[in-house]
Length: 168
Image (tube, one colour):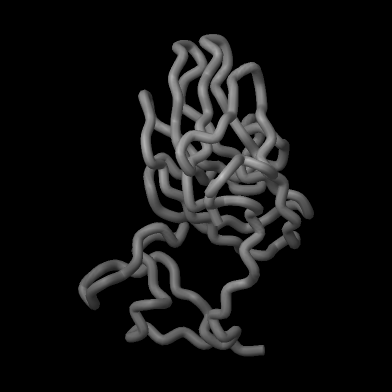
């Protein structure tokens, strides 16, 4: 099959290779263009309960910090020793690309969302280090058949928290 790229279709262009910053004007650099021969159809949302409307079901607490529901958001809190993290496994196909979206709605020291090959953020080989430290999105290419969406706060030294919502 042949690839089809249209540099005039701004909806398919991003300024960086991770697909975080969309191209909004013809004068901006292009770091990533999506192949339009595949129809640009998004697959199903693989995240379970990423809106946290009533609970954090489907998300597993990691380390000695805590994960809890807080007014429609996932709240991770460090223990003062380890960062607070929650993760969820998703089935991935090796070599396929996936887009992760998230809103970080509050934090004492910042929050992060990353993709890992383990259920905690220690090994981010599936996402080759991609992580989101603000509202937005990133794209990763899976290197395994299971990847983990990992949400956590930035510090394990102090008791701090981060709030996450709308993960897909």
